[in-house]
Amino acid sequence: MTRRLLQIAIRFFLTAFLAGGLLAAPALHAAEVRIEQAQLEATDDGYRLVSAFSFELKRVLEDALNRGVPLYFTTDVELNRPRWYWFDENTVRTSHTIRISYNVLTRQYFAAAAGSLRQSFSSLEDALSLVRRPPRWLVADKDALKPGATYQVSLRMRLDVTQLPKPFQVNAMNDSDWRLSSDWKSFTYKAE
Image (cartoon, rainbow, N blue to C red; front, side):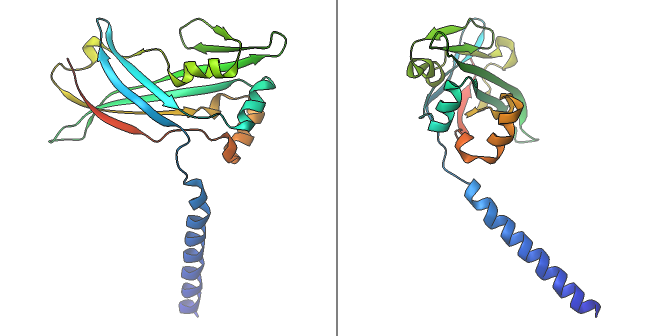
């Protein structure tokens, strides 16, 4: 009797495992955002990220934006220093967000990055150009990286649905039209 119950339990768990894998398969999709350019440059105040992205805004996102829902585009950057004798050293982990919004009364789009002024644009394409080619932003202070050391730099850009108004967050988590992101892109950088 117990052997029969054990066989049934194993079949149940195998079926659930396989069904879960098949249900998760549609979630694996190609990135909607391509990273066209990614590099670090050393400046007097630290290391700045130079990046460029290529993407088209989905119709659902454009409609939401035109109805007053702001969209938040976040670029995540990680710098790790590989070590042969231990785990990689996580040196820097930072994010930069650009908020795009639309004012129905003035019929203007607004873009604002953290720590900078808000700019107005007459068209959505002009506002998105700030997201596609963001200004160089400080990723790490000058003393955060060891001169001569080689670092693995990884970055991605995504629509940050966690910053949407609460009712839209629930919809965005369950709707693939609200997913807009790139894959992680990695490159090596030798600190100066």
